[in-house]
Length: 132
Picture 1 (cartoon, rainbow, N blue to C red):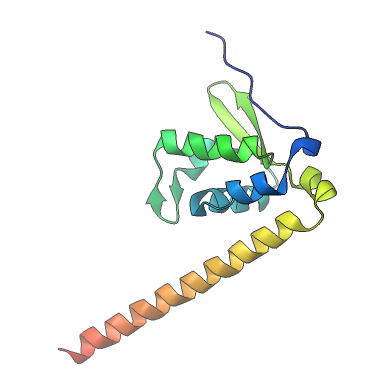
Picture 2: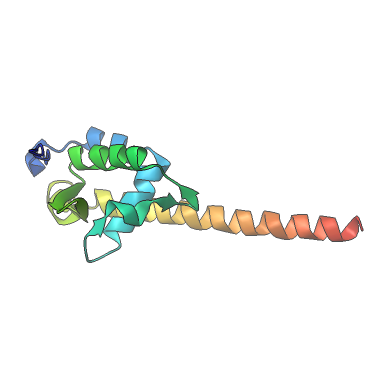
């Protein structure tokens, strides 16, 4: 059985629209931000849970395909596993600062969401204690 080759667009074929589309999904931006923050490649199984939610393998494969075809990651098969690395350095040469800005904005949003979640839990606990 022969595996189809993976599509990796040349950096000149990468568009801002494709990048923004690929990163418009909360799961994909979380996956990408995680990949960008690491120095080594990751297999797809490392992302089976995003934001404490399990992601089915078929859905995860589709997310990685969209990221790869947008030119954001490079996938490499090693046996039966797929390992993914960021193409940030290449993208940054074409669109300086774009990826860093998106990842920074995602991290700010994530921190805000975490703070809100913690505050809501504290308020719920206080209300429960008062009603007793």
